[in-house]
Length: 236
Ligand code: DGP
Ligand code: NA
Ligand code: NA
Image (cartoon, rainbow, N blue to C red):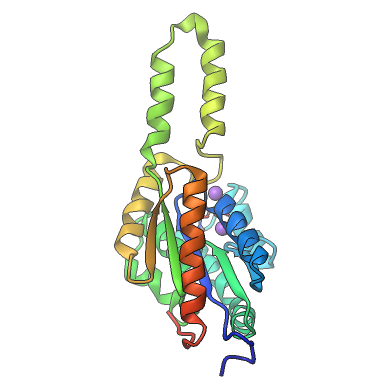
């Protein structure tokens, strides 16, 4: 049963990557491309900060609240579970979902804190399995290296200029102020992401020009949408 969607079910397409890997802008670009093609498509993101669970997550990420590592892990998972039935009905009704982060973020970010990976995966079991996971691959250390070179290359009396350049570096992809946005942590997240890759993953070089990345995502998404129309939805 495909829920009556004329062209079969929609595809569950997930974008994953480190913070500032370009996921959010690429999701938005992909979404408008698919809409332009006449595909029924919606853009989703996790954490969904609009639900009551999502508000707790958002406060935690902004360092406005403290939560035990396992507690926040389960809240992130609950935030996906509370959307599962809506996700399923959208997909069966023929709508493709482009989702910015999913269970792999859940496992990679919590495992990077040192939690057992099997324990991290357990609450994700039974959520819908993506048809395609696009991993935007960027190097976490490039951002610091750039700032360090800029900083050491200027004498002290040019401090004002240095600060301006620092600001530039931040605009160009330095991390923001949320809890996980530190280079050492992002490196560990990257290692865990690496160990999670399976046959549904496509790794795209996120350091390529934006238009090139966009083009690759379009092709991956179009292929996925046509291939999964008659496939059963499965669970993680
Ligand atoms: P975003 O809204 O995409 O910027 O994500 C917020 C931050 O939360 C980002 O550093 C990634 C992290 N994150 C996203 N999903 C999960 C999750 O399920 N578990 C954990 N521990 N962190 C997550
Ligand atoms: Na972020
Ligand atoms: Na997100």
